[in-house]
Length: 196
Image (cartoon, rainbow, N blue to C red; front, side, top):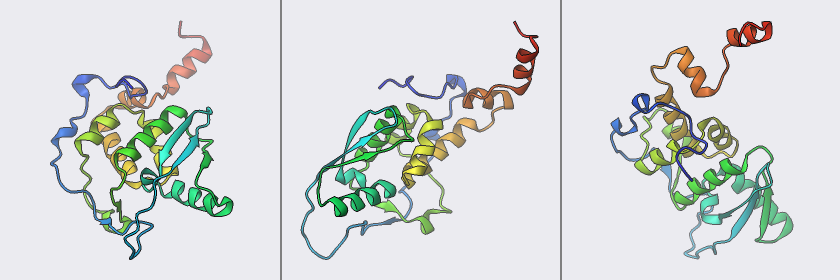
């Protein structure tokens, strides 16, 4: 996917410098994970199929699934009810492009421990290099609500930090451009026939 596809249009001289943040460890994490037990048995990797609101199918590994609390709970419930490993989940509120990006992010971070919310709330957020490049190619206006709904805490934290850096120091008109919001005055003038 190209960097222009679905990205926020920010002039390069005003682009945020993600690299000014020091590289440090991520927030405290729960190393046990959602399925930890005392056995050394390794769970077999399986794939689920996610279907976006525009009917695009995206496959996701069970290892990557752990990054999304909402998907993990949904798939776990479906597997118990249907007693099967092959699961399809309809996600009616996320576009195919955004869902593909979310799965790409989760696959990149599969196997990584999940941040513990209470301990990481007041910690500064530093975005690793891979995530900086990934977020630069995403439409954050679509990615952030999707990450929130799917309960992907680390992606939401990184995305909010990136959005804060993009909007930092912008004028009201520049913010309207970033978020694609029309000026009320322009709408009033168009309605009155004053703008050609």
